[in-house]
Image (tube, rainbow, N blue to C red; front, side, top):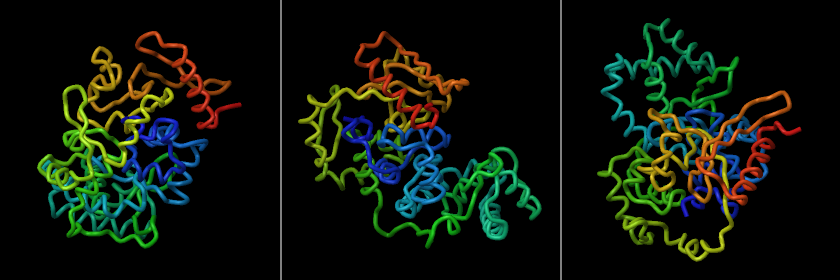
Length: 354
């Protein structure tokens, strides 16, 4: 069910990149190449360069800070309301850390104004170039103060990631990146119920605690929203626990028995593995550290009908891209055939087929 909600079954994959990004309410983009690979199994027949086409030419998706205050690809059409929701929450939550790094409110306000003028005058700049320009204006940033300051500005709707320059990403004013961009202040209407519905559309069945883990919002903010949409939810039982899904997804229950096997090679930091408070339902605890040994690194996974059965990696060779498979246990011939099909599609998607 969760695999289908994630557009990872064959009958649920999306038609276009911005459509899928919007349906999932964002794609984790801590590493842009991994975000690009996350879109492969959720779309049909596209090439990797289509993702950059959508981001830098069409600009229908934007790389910016989103859920959990981490880098995501977000649909441009969602940007205003999501930033107006997440921005105040995460900037307030990070205030103490910014102060520890020498970025009190006065420094952040002054720095934002300086950065707006610098980017307006010089156009897209790399992180190092921004630091140099700010230092010339009397604002010196070092170490972790740099990403914290840039994240603060992005969550305030000032900037996003732009084109690459000499192999380095640049930052650009959102008003220069998107036509008619105007940041919306926090809406007078409550956006949390809408976000809860969007979350469940992409992660059902789930619980409020899962929603909190995915979004980075507190249960104090989430529980009232969950109650507000109660008439749109269907209650289900999963391993002695109650979870919820959308009533509009009820027909999925009838289709489970006839759903064909779905085998997917998911990249590092895939959204599916970051959508719930626990991964115990998808990976045996015996192998959990093969996925995440500690810290924030989530390794590429072999996932079959939502269950993690192994890990994989790629190796570039003279004759093309080689995919190395490391299953946790012996695989059935049907799963092996599915993996081979995924490998072929991964090579095709990456443009390494010959």
